[in-house]
Length: 170
Image (tube, rainbow, N blue to C red):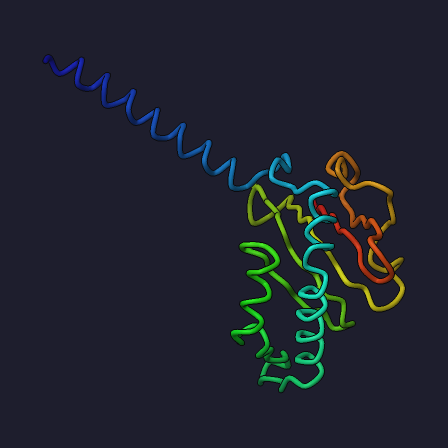
């Protein structure tokens, strides 16, 4: 085989590898929200695992209230390290992340994506809001096409204090 053919094959393979790598990175970043679960899917998961959602919420809120503060002024949550917490989260949805905020709202992140560390990014999940939800986002009857809306936080009520959440930042 002559050197030109070898060089050509090498370049073609390199381009193919780069194309596959770029496609994989685009799929992982998911800027088009292709992996976003449908509202119906989230509603079904919530109804099926309602008790687990409540237990995780209670664990995180109780932990937030009692957690010691480190030298940086950040509370050290221990609930996420417990076997019970890990079991409940795994029961609800594989790869689910749950976070509690200072106001005791709890977010369950089902899917999300981003193009770069500088944004834009998005997240869809379920949130418990203990107080007035208006401070968190805009209430809509359907969030399946929320990616077409302006960057903001949107909510769809499931039951009192529980919402489907879609957040997109730019």
